[in-house]
Image (cartoon, rainbow, N blue to C red; front, side):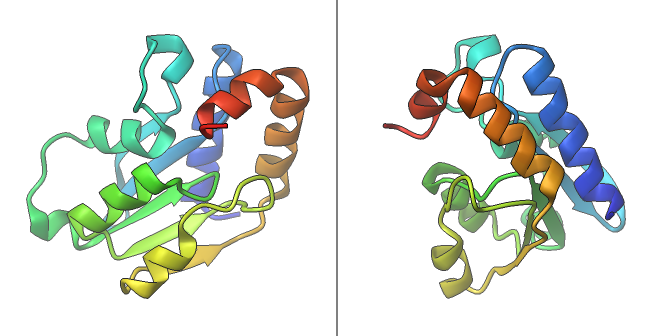
Length: 145
């Protein structure tokens, strides 16, 4: 298991334990995690704190050059908002744990030159399925249904 995806999965589990949506993410530059986060929409009453957005926020303000050398790891296929942010900052690589639960904007990312890799992480998939079974309304809210 990739240590960076494992770190993103740990973030997802934190979100779940906090009563939130179990999606985690880490931003990696030069072999080091420079930002980590998890979905905090429930915990903070936020409309935008998806896992990827939280990881980017926690990385702090960075130069365009740094973003252009990063890889973003996320436990679930990125939604339109998170994908737009990936494109805006020029992050060239995204590693996704699973996309069976939700297919985000992978096609858009790929069409714009982002290298997208899906690892089919069974633990991430199982955690999302457990969460959706327990809190279907919250899941639907998160994906805009």
